[in-house]
Length: 112
Image (cartoon, rainbow, N blue to C red):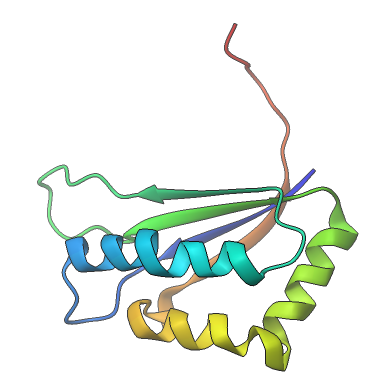
């Protein structure tokens, strides 16, 4: 299984609450509706620890069955049909601070 992991920072002027609400209620469902090959999608919203502004506001993990499935999704994202996702990201994400890595998991411990 292949996973895309993305770290996000909200656009200036958005509160963390506004960012989280839009990401969860608008963007996430839209991505799941149109992005091909998604096996699992998890949003991780930052926890306010009272230590100032976080470097990132959240992380998305998107699982695919294999590298080919991920590549098809990446091609879709960069295509004219994927423009709707990119345009929506520009509404709430500071894309200059977005960080994406593609990984294969190596589970070191599994809960019993």
